[in-house]
Image 1 (cartoon, rainbow, N blue to C red):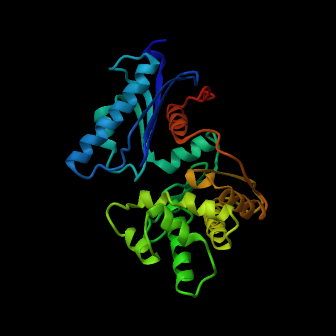
Image 2: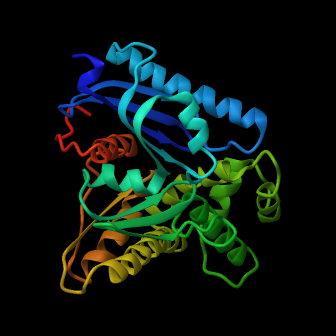
Image 3: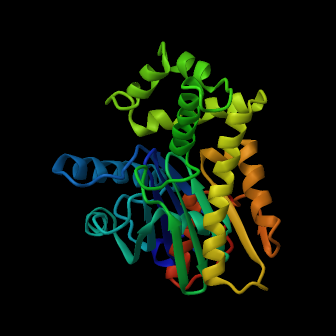
Length: 313
């Protein structure tokens, strides 16, 4: 197969990693690549790192696909954490394509999770937000960042757990084993010390967010306060899904919702999320079909007017 028949590129540029897929005109995935994060481009050094990461990721996929270094794609889609506005021109410098789409990560996450179908996806990792599409209409909810939102995210879970532990420590909250667990994993010797650790540079949001798995462990042991935190996370995310559903669909329409992100590895979060949505009727929750990088490839096909069924992802 030569380049005139068309090759397609999909890239998921995230906060933790960058992933690329190259597909042929039939929907067969030929190559995969993975590299580090590429979400910041505000300074000259960051822009250089961004271009290097994108280049390495696409080069790895291109090598696996056995394509020339000067390949020009028929269509390319990039879904970028933090949005596309400051990345479009940089990407066009680095990658050759006849047709382009640079969008946000929620757009490709939905396409991957529902294999290109309309619906809603909840995204919950370090942060959180929810995105929905019905035809040409789209809407997002949440994603306001750790100061004003990110409800249901891993950082939010860790924050709520510490708040619960502090309330118990001061005598105005329910009994909980959250504080001993947080002290053990952080090396702190008091609730006050745990609190102040989270303001220090060596405890960035991503590190604090990893404590969500500890909250889940305490919940698994039957701790009522921890259970409340993780179940509330699922319900918060479901409320965003419900808000989008009410804006884009009529009450009698059936809507499919899915989910991605490390927070959903918690059975408690997933259960409360699913129950909150399905108890209302007309909303069905299903596991994601593919990841966001596959969603980007689907959107590259869509951009070019091609409709192959993606396979071998």
